[in-house]
Length: 547
Image (cartoon, rainbow, N blue to C red; front, side, top):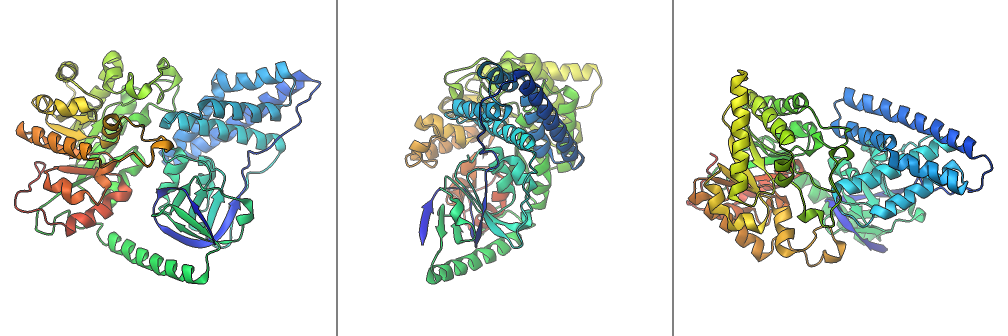
């Protein structure tokens, strides 16, 4: 038996044979040509065909209301439309007298290597987009059809890497799990894989000789066992059976109340990144949306979304959720998570740079349009608004001034709106230390533990070298959560947690006992957290201010 350890991006146990998926982009071509003009014409021809394919895929995704897939196609069309990628290929053909195929593959590799050290989600998406487009161009050049994944029985899919398009094309019923050598937990590919609800491991040194071999995937331990012996296989089949029974039990909790074992109601909410996930929220019957990220409306575009586009999305969320509270986080975008149309300069340390509310207060027209769209949509449901990366009372007051101007404008035009709750994301040590002063100005505080942890520990949470040292439940973080809850409650605010730590079921009971009013988690974590809530006794002192 061979044992391999990687990083789990989705938990679970899978047992089955391996299907090795060859990387369709690993081609090398001769680089000598005599007719540069002919190669340039060839590139324009294959580029046009790629644009046609992506445009058709975009239309199909829009027609099927698949927002993530539509965004992916739009991003890739944008890369082809921008001068950088195509200019690099054309320049290489002209100056080095190489074939189109060689220029495409070399440009792909060079651009990927240039961005490889950066960990921001938008940069990782950019790398994946470049690779995906290059591979599409190479296949068109080679006259090859895109390989279809058509195994007779469900298999574990192993690949050096998988593109988002390849995942989209899979027959989902034939995939037991994923093993890949490269990848990131934040990539679009990983997001699509997680949505399939099967175990997935990255950073596994997959090999083509694994084709047809038996494998056990343990998404809890982050390990893959190739050619396990019978005794080991028997043990894991027993664990898999137990896991399935647990999953069946979790499914039975879909429409159960979020109430502790000693009878205290708990406010369990969902984090979502786009409109596609609204149905998941309703299916799991949580109290509402504790975090609706609005970045999806700004990325993968050639220009800023209009107020009308923003309004339509927020109205859809408000109408879908009805009386259930939906908390919309205003644009949290920065120097790496950006688009060309924004004209944002490069920064040496973007995590500490001009992002979140800092950028929004500089670009007031953009900010006002988003706030105006949220207030217009508030007439159709139960919305709240929160602002990211706030560190001072002065920022809150500046925000309030803009909000007041927006409301005054709506009244002047007789456009209906509701008075909605105002809050901030507490995600810096400064915001924690100023929690009481900030709470006096606000209706709620929502703790974003992802950034709070990395800023407090001074560790990049995506740096693999720090994996063993990075501690999300570090005692300092727990102290900060207690402090924020205490100071927020003193000023009459409700306090929630919307970071990844909210889904840590080992801490659920502790969060409730220290008085956290709302736990907001990704849809996949709703039922496991609900299970722990229903098994926990918190005592007579607990009462959520959101009830």
